[in-house]
Length: 274
Image (cartoon, rainbow, N blue to C red; front, side, top):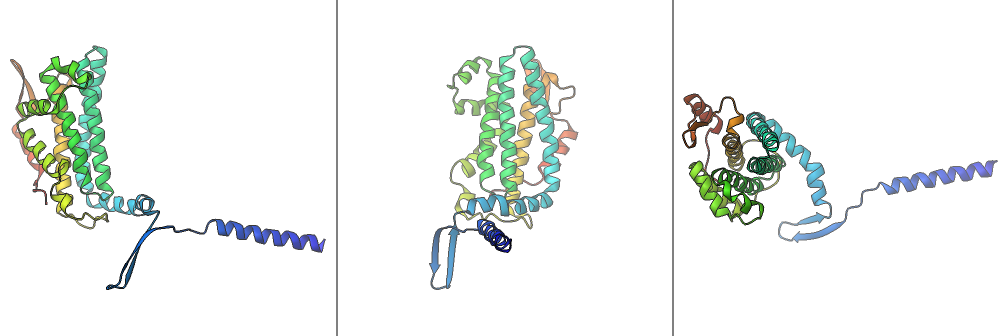
C-alpha cells in the first residue's frame, strides 16, 4: 500500500509540473536591433500584433471613450437618423420594385459601415487610417447622388462601368461643398499627404491633439454627408426635411436659419490637416 501510494503521489507531482510547464509563456523573437551608442537592445517579438489588439487596444479604446464622449454622442445621434432613412428607403424601394432606390440604399448602408469602421480604427489609436476609409464613403455618396440625378446610368452602375469622375461631378452639382471635401480627402489620405509624412504612434489618448481634432472633424463632415444624401435620396419618406425642399424640377438645398445654427455648432472649428 505504501509503495503504491508513493507512486501515485509522484505521478501527481509530475503531472502538476507538466501542467505548470504548459502555461509558461514562450516569447519568440522576430528580430532584434542593438544600439551600441545608447547601449539599448530593441527586441521585436512574434506577438506584437496580438499584443496591440488584446493588450494595448482596450486601454487605448477606453481613453478615447473618456476623452471623446461628447463627440461620439453627437455623431451617433446623426448617424442613427441617417441609418433610419437608409432602412426606410430600402423598405419602400423593395415594396415598389424601385431598383434605383434599392441601389442607393445599398450604397449608403455600406458607406455607413465604412463610417463606423473609421470610428473604430480611430478609437484604437490609428490617426492616419480613418481618412483613408472615409474617402471610400465619399465615393459611395457621390455615386448615390449621381444615380439620383441620372437614373439612366443605373445599368452602367450595375454592370460596373460607371466611372468615378462622372459621379464626382454630379455630386459637386448637387452639393457644391462636396468638391472641396473630396479634394481634401484625396490629397491627404488617398495620396501621400501630411499625416503620411510623420510618425503616428499608437498610444493612449491623454488629451486632444491636432491629428485627433482633424479626424473628429472629418468624421463630422462624413456623417453629415451621409445624412444630407439620405435626406435627398429618400426625401418623400420624411415628414419634416431639414435640408431639401421640393421645387418645380426636383429639390432645392435650403436649410432653415435654425438648421444653419445647428450646423455651425455641429461642425465647430474644422482645422487644416497637420
